[in-house]
Image (cartoon, rainbow, N blue to C red; front, side, top):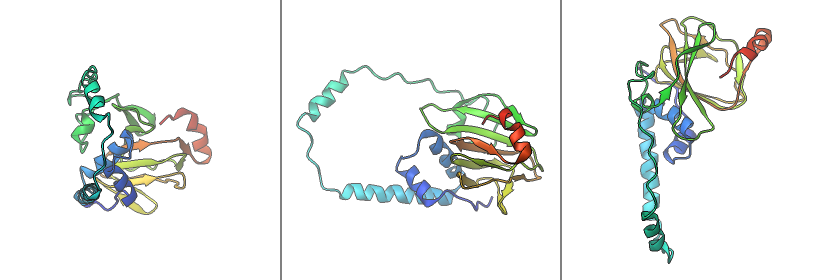
Length: 216
């Protein structure tokens, strides 16, 4: 497996520093589960951040720091949500990392001919929606754009757009400046994990006709 498309350095830095919401974090982490190159880069960033922290001069604690900690010891323990069993509707998705399989999800549902979606329920508040998108081989999707960003990590199959090929492990970042004209590869269903903000905007006469019928 050759991975040729990766998250940007800025996005990997935001991941390493914990500045992504859960939906964005899942999309990048899914790519990392396939890509040793990006894993090495993230480890380098984390180690560099640790060196910076260790080099900072000591700071004096607040005079009431100890009493604040003691007061928290008497607070009731937070309720921890039960962990979903991995034998759920995500258990049979090839290439999906274990940490995503532990989340709950709905059933596959059709949103357009040859296109199905499976929505994933996040365990923490997030402004990003996460879902799996499955598209039949050999078809072309209607041209479309987005009002926000879209992160896509390929789990199986492939697609092309803008003259570039995306296969298993590849990562694509779209934003409102990008128009997609996607063609699905012939080797089988293309299944992608998608993290999205904003809305999908279909282009052309046919796109405008079916736009009200599609909700992503």
